Structure formats: structure tokens, C-alpha cells
Amino acid sequence: MGKQSLFRYFDKEEWANAFIAGRLRFSKLSYYQCMEYDGVRSDPNEGVSVYSPNGGLEINNLTQGTNLKLEGYSFEALARDDEIFVCCLSRTFGKKLWDDFKAVTCVEITDVSGFCRKITAALPIQAKFSDVVGGRRIGHRVKYYDNTSSPTPRWALPGLIATSKPRDYEWQDEFRLAFTLTDALEFQRVDLRLKPKNEVNSMILEGDQHMNISVEPLSDICRIRKYDELP
Image (cartoon, rainbow, N blue to C red; front, side, top):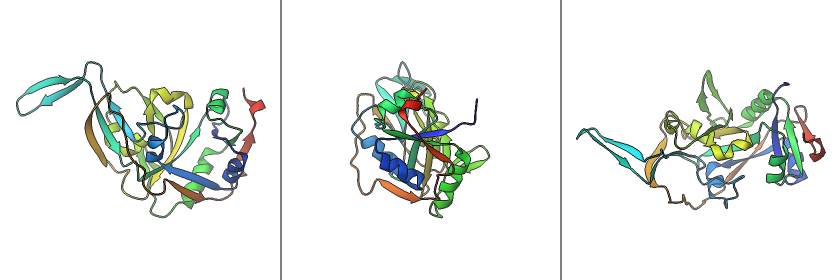
């Protein structure tokens, strides 16, 4: 197997050309949460860690030494989704992604490390990234999870919440760039809640949901891929 590439699907050729020229757009997590649901770009649980075990949540009362099962509720940890910016790509070049993203063209990034370095160098000096083994970095392969599985340690790590998604999205094989200009990616910078399972997340978008970044041209590490090249 050759060196791993990344892929970005575009429904307009001019946006693909702008990307290669070094004009990139990052969007807030809240932007994807508030999009009309389509099962592709939108995700009502974007920026949220959801734990909804079979049989209900086990609640322990340490004072009284008792426990109970709370049925019909989820335990959620919410990252500061209005302060975290992401740029979403895929590790897969495939027909399903092309069709579902209604693409007319696709950009392949052939040097992932070089791509991340160029973007990191172009960000504001106060930009911060999430913790990973060996340090902090902007790019992460998205982790997919079942909401019936333990949320530890994801619930306390906003960077992991920002780069995790429910298993329903696993087909996207996503690689995500994420940063913040605040402390939103620091340990336990989350809000916790118990939420009825049938309650839909709702919020109103305020202010600009995007940040445009100008980086060095990417033509040396990118190339255009066409539909007839699909495997």
C-alpha cells in the first residue's frame, strides 16, 4: 500500500482551484450541528459526546450508598462548539463519497504532513490544538464510536470530542483539522448534561460561522482527481 493521501470533495470546480491555490475555509462545529439534517455534512451531535447505554444510565449516590438505572436519558459532554474550527477531509477516494457529497471534482493531498505544516504556519499566533501522544497537532484521524460504549476518556477531552463522531458516519473515513483561538480544547472545558433521548439538540447560529485561511500554494502536494478515476 502506498503512502496515505487525503481527499476533499467539491461541488464546484472554482472551490477546488481556490483550495489548491491556498485559500481554505474552516467552519465552527456549531455550523454542522445546525445544518438541515442530510446524514452527510450535518450532524446534530457535532461537538457532543453521547453516552446512552442499553438498559439506562447507572446513577450512583455516593452519599446514600445507593444506585439506580435512569432509563430514556443520555449522558452528554458538550465541547464549546462555537469556538472550535474544523476542516473536514476523507482518507478514501470512492464513489459513495463522491455521490453523497454531490461532487464535480476532488482534490487529493499527497503529503499530509506537509499539508498540516503549511496550514499550521498560516494560522493566527494564538491558535491552539488538541493534545495527542507526543504533543499537540492540528490534524487527526476521526474516531468513530457507539453511543452505548463507555465515553471515557472522550467526555473530558474537547479535542477528542471534536475529532470523534457516531459510528453512523464511519463510511466517511474522515481526517479532520481542528483548532481554537481560545482555551476551548483544554482538559474538561465541557458542559455536562443528562438529556432525554428523544430530545433534539437545537441552537441558533450567531455571527460568522467560518474562518478563511490563506496558506502557501498547495499545488506541489495536491492534484485534481476526476470521476472516471474512481476505483
